[in-house]
Length: 83
Image 1 (cartoon, helix red, strand yellow):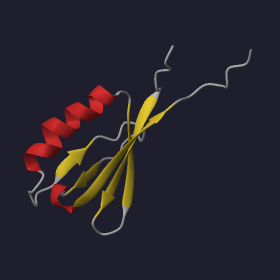
Image 2 (cartoon, one colour; image 1 turned 135 degrees about the vertical axis):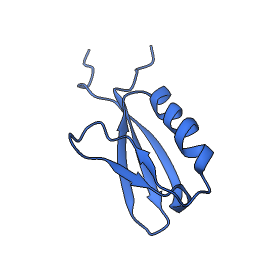
Image 3 (spheres, helix red, strand yellow; image 1 turned 30 degrees about the vertical axis):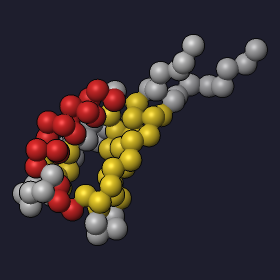
Image 4 (cartoon, one colour; image 1 turned 90 degrees about the horizontal axis):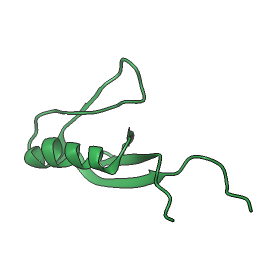
């Protein structure tokens, strides 16, 4: 039986060399933000909001045309299964 990730870490690599890390609870949540917010404005120079759910009271905005790459990594929590 395949394991289900507890969350997804999204690494946003900017053209300036900086790397930002954002966490999503599900891949569908990331896909909704990516296709609904990021893709329609991919070539724009205006700021878009990036959801940060794990840091209370903080937010991030970025210019979509400055994003060089996005990497999505599943994170599995819990302990190692022992038999």
